[in-house]
Length: 90
Image 1 (cartoon, rainbow, N blue to C red):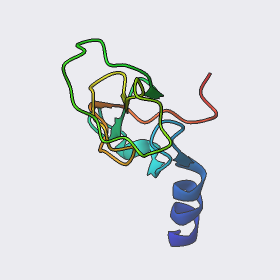
Image 2 (cartoon, helix red, strand yellow):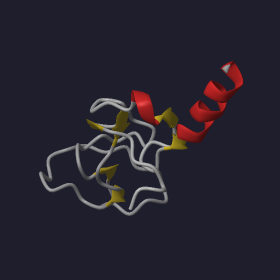
Image 3 (cartoon, rainbow, N blue to C red):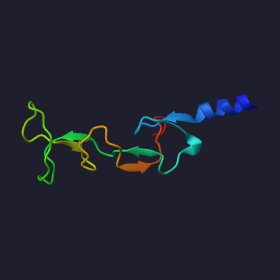
Image 4 (cartoon, one colour):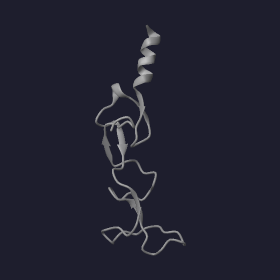
């Protein structure tokens, strides 16, 4: 009986295509996945007022940030939460 339960749990474990974490479908909630809905871009920010740390080889107009929230760290926690989405879901 216990072995059957473990097999069922393995079958429902998936990888989220947004945050790349593994999750169990039975515990997927509206706040399970934290991600950025937009890309990390390299361009001038719309507000034109922010100071950006640029490397010496970067062009002077370059700015690097998430287009959705303005976070400048590519490793920044996502600004949006939602359900995990599996690669199987289309």
